[in-house]
Amino acid sequence: MKTNSFISEQELTEQKQIASALSQEIRARNLKFFVETFGCQMNVRDSETIKGWLSLIGYQEAADKETADLILFNTCCVREHAEKRLMGNIGALKELKDANPGMIIGICGCMMQQQDMAKKLLKRFPHVSLIFGTNVLHRFPEMLRAVLNGERIAVTDRADDAIAEDLPKLRDNERSAFVNIMYGCDNYCSYCIVPYVRGHERSRKPEDIRNEIVSLTDSGITEITLLGQNVNSYGNDGSAGMRFADLLRYVSDVPGLKRIRFMSSHPKDLNEDVMQAIASLGNVCHHVHLPVQSGNNEILKRMNRRYTREHYLSIVSRLRELVPDIEFTTDIIVGFPGETEEAFSDTLSLVEEVGFAAAFTFAYSPRLGTVAARMEDQIPESVKKQRLKALNELQARKTVENNLKYIGHIGEVLVEGCDERGEETMLYGKYQNFKMVYFPGCKELLNRYVTVKVTKANKNSLLGEMIDA
Ligand code: SAH
Ligand code: SF4
Ligand code: F3S
Image (tube, rainbow, N blue to C red; front, side, top):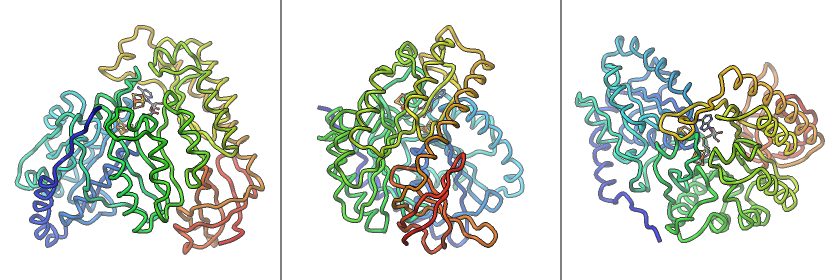
């Protein structure tokens, strides 16, 4: 059985002491930070930790980059265009830095874990002074102190290390929160860079997860999303003493916890036990984000996904049998090396058959160091573009079909936001199965649960009316 290592309490106390020693001066100077986050929920969650440290160190959040004294980009490298965009973004900050020479510009996140990237960026952008990777967030105060003392640093220790518990965090809402249950990924899908940059899979202890959820619900949070690259393999290495279905059962009775979401699910590990847990636990939401990637068995094999089209479809039909109102969302890649027109048409037919509520679709992007990037039969960009367009058109039609099912539907919605449109205030929020609905109401209902009836289905959204606040 595997055991994970943890950052010691003493080490964390030392970092908190550094933070508090820095905070007097930072507060006196009224300094502000701006953190911009790219990529997936992992990065969103990491940014909450970084913002938590920055607050502890005495910084306040700035409304925009122009009024910030510290700007940090939390980066993603899952596809190539993210990289190009980042370079443009950093280049553009040179002017701000010239106008405010004391400004600190930093870059962190997944892209910094790529071989030699940190060094390369430090050299290329003299106005950047703080670079760090995904596995050293617990050392943020020490890193920032060095930069405040005039150093330029890049700290990107390998991501295979210890789990850090009890780091500070600053959240941007009072209703809903992300909770990591595991870090890293061991699946090595042949196209994917995540295992290389985020390191091997490590599961947090169930007690630590539950304690975090208890403290969140104590502070008024009612909805949590359990996060992992593949939540269904939680504890598979034996280190946690329980598996994902047990974890769902173990946290589901936390008082005040109305909704449990989780993502992402990998089809190869979504077993009957997990399906039974979804069906039987009252507060586990009836929504599964289940990336299929392709509908063709040959491509799935070359992607190293380790399931077949048939297996995928069997999960969908079993879950629909157990949980009739369940909704599925997915991720799909088109133009994977070797994808023929016929293989692509299998993806279209799968999308037709399943009827996803929504799909996140991507043109295959070769990532340095991955197996698929070395495959011979790469697909021309123009073909990828055509296929993406065809797939998106099909999904748009399926989204409308899915929306139409909801006319007359009545259910509880957690209010997430409001749009002031002239005279009228429109609220929006989600049913427990992830469908979003817009309806007239007042701002005071933000973060509350209200009952909404769907009256109209638009192309991309549902409209409704409140029947009970
Ligand atoms: N762990 C999650 C996915 C994380 S990455 C899972 O396995 O479901 C999010 C999505 O980005 C993937 O599902 C995939 O559809 C897409 N993606 C990953 N690598 C890609 C690449 N090289 N090119 C295009 N899309 C990619
Ligand atoms: Fe990437 Fe596959 Fe891991 Fe998801 S499961 S992060 S796609 S390697
Ligand atoms: Fe991107 Fe890192 Fe997530 S590469 S998709 S931010 S794990």
